[in-house]
Image 1 (cartoon, rainbow, N blue to C red):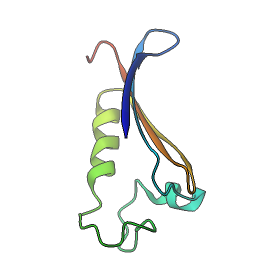
Image 2 (image 1 turned 120 degrees about the horizontal axis):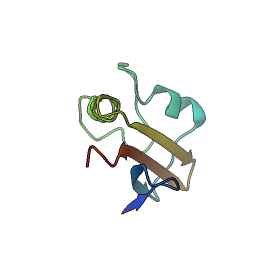
Image 3 (image 1 turned 45 degrees about the horizontal axis):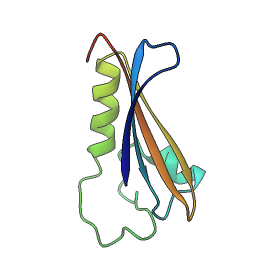
Image 4 (image 1 turned 180 degrees about the vertical axis):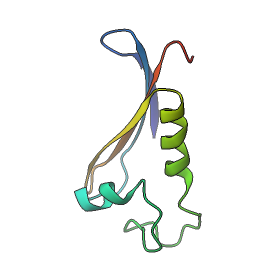
Amino acid sequence: MTVNVDKSQNYDFIDIAIVDNGVGMTEEQVKKLFRIEKDNSTPGTENESGTGLGLIICKEFAEMNRGLISVKSVVDEGTCFTISLPQSVM
């Protein structure tokens, strides 16, 4: 896992990217990430416990601070989550 922090191209935002080279997710799985669902498991993580609220809380935090969170994922390659927050918040 790596974490990168950069200024956005227009310098108004700070981008925090968290990248892993894990199992990745399908497009359908990515669509479900920010919803509360009983069966929201990614293959390879079935034995991990949690409430499933972590990403929902991250999204709410970003939006409350006039930012956003985005996800890019490729099955069998990994996932990148990017949180973009206005510099004024930082």
